[in-house]
Image 1: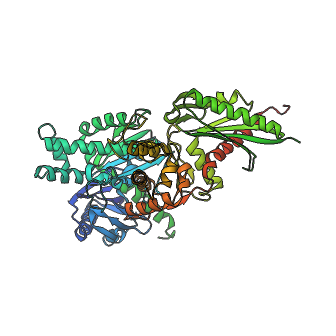
Image 2: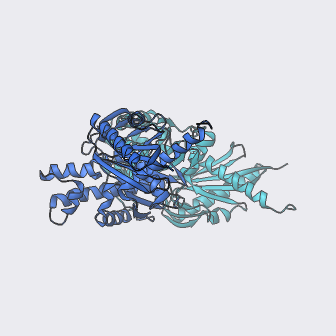
Length: 310
Length: 310
């Protein structure tokens, strides 16, 4: 008997992570390629789908649905990314890109929302009814659950924390605004600011390794922590979640991130209890697993609506 | 036949506004006294209740419920204000204060949440399912409705926009933090900053009158508008409401507030549509009417649970 499986693709600002996942959430195969920008980023998605579709055939698996997630402003129904500054995308139909490779229903969604959903179903936020999943990778976005329901916003675009102004009139952001959270506190922002300050190239993860011996790394990281604290304090005062889950690539920094954010948040909220703070348990797999959850839903919908004799 | 009526009290940072309201929301009598601070503010609430209870008797009305709202951190169930910086209150039982004067069930709530509820039921947000009621009086707080449900937070304290950090490390706030929205943009903050800059005393409303001829007034007001824009842009990016209603005393400034906030918000959200912006239609009555709505609910609950032979 041929086993069915799902194709899941997470288009990050740095890496396209993809996997074949079974319906219980187990990863059966993985693939990872650099994202690139613009057309190249679309080609990277196509290549990932092609590679994993071949892999599925080789493993004797039948793909029944695909889920693909990216940052930016997404029209989930149309399957289109309207705008994603970190990918240089405007009006890219991810559904068409993936659908040109695999002949299955394709769900399209927002990476941070997918990661939040995966942490809620399978990870650090399981059982919580009021939490913020704060995802810090190349960019920053949040997935917000209030009273047991995920907030999607009036047009599906809630949670765009990355472009909230933490330093009004501050440093320029690629989005065209100034002082956005991402400028100071995203993986991309940390790397850019470290280069500006030191003249040396390093990823955000490398900056964390340098904290003890490099004053430029220390300053850039302290600025990032301060920006996270400002943003999380604002969210805590506006939404009063019981829990904040730190996810995305930079959450892997562990105590270098968690300790100072916890201290800063307690100082910033002197007259009320800060929310509990946890690091993602799904790590950098969260958005991919969220894409698989979406793929499972769209596969079920497609099966349910197929004529009986198919 | 004796008509029944509700006692509604709005403890603002400057004025205790109170009213007798019938069950259709019509105001039958009003009373207004300066708030004072600490014990004096409690006495002002007691005096308002005493005055209106006598007035109700004189009008042949039977009070069946009371609602009282204030800023701060409120325990609605216990009827206690845990902390309110603008009133110098810590652990004040508003239910006991009002209950010592009138022998009816007393509902206690948050002023900005009550104002938002009144605008939702009776005013500028009628029919909306995704809006923020942004209330700017002596202090600042918000009432947030998402997908048709009001957000209360994990412990009832959502919407405390006034103490979100709009200028990290900025000017000192009476709450003990620095750079809070209220420092720059509340009625109290505008008056304080105008005094610091000009050496002259003026209320926020008087500052608005001076805009055309007083550079200090212009600077303080421009700073306030910039802070509102920063805060509203953040809320729009995080929650994506379809509508923002500006309420509270300062919303009465009309175009001096609405025009620059609308322009600033459009500039701050270049890559997505800003929410619609409206001024409260209930004006400074909003929180009082919200308190009356709460009083009506608690009166109904009390009637429903009374033994039949009473």
